[in-house]
Length: 472
Image: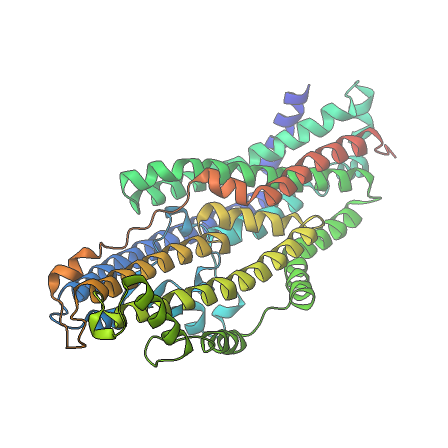
């Protein structure tokens, strides 16, 4: 009986011109967004690869110079794009895509597309995630708002009940019918997305993205199921189809339009983060409390005393190592401690803000779904932080290599020392590997749990409402 009801619902939707029109619009927008994402992904990936090769070539061809000058010369590190980022751009337009790695500084990321966006673009960019998170739920609302109330108003609900159809069978059949109707538009769009991802990626990247795609697809299925369950429940107990539509549209607006703004304002109010200027000032103040690697100070004298004691000498000329290299590395070590403390505090603030978003997501599953989508697309803040830490470790490796060269190979008399390409080649190219799907699932466990709870809760609510549906 459940399958018969599903077939009947599916057939009625196919005959409904409103469904065909709305579904076609959603399909066109989704397919278009995926194709635009594919083109953008290909262009950006090619630009990153070209730029990374260029910065590597510049590093290797810088010629003879002092190692510390090379440390200031620096290199760029470009954040690679996970193939699924063509579906969801996430935080990438705001966090930046490249960072300059040089001595004594942990620089901010550069090249944020959001900074160059026009006023119209700042209202939002059409991506596959936007369509899936906002327009597909709206389509579900339009398909299901009169699932029970419409039957009641037409008088067919009494007839169905008189035939011995149980409320649970009726609710399940209608849910399956809606799922089948949505599948007509979403499955072809998913195929287009999969082809786009394969076309934009190497074979290895595609294979690494399969688990991410699986998790993302499952999450969206649960999200759509949650909206279907809520819609069926409202349709069952609402006094009329008009009332059901108004309630569901209000829920849709709250979920997709109001809740994100409320969560953002609450997070900023309860866990305010410093401005970029204030953060930079605080970090600079902390850095000035020790040696800067160039001007001798209290720490420099301590270092001299420690080296004299270690090597059992009483003057600089007798040291078997170059004091400048040791001072420079000590400056780096001090700076690294400041950077670690400053950024750890900043990232902890962002983590606290994200927890506030998760609390709001308990009343608005769209927030949790947005976090999950960005996570498996590789564009959430957690993966930006993962890359930032890897880039910073690479920067510190470069500085250690340059300073060690000065310490152990430069003349101890203070005479000029020039290194050549043999030293530059010791610095291997920056090679970053994005975390796997298991790492992402662990990071997104709270949001995944919220989406799952919404799915299960909405299913129970729909079943409960169906058993108590009013026939008249």
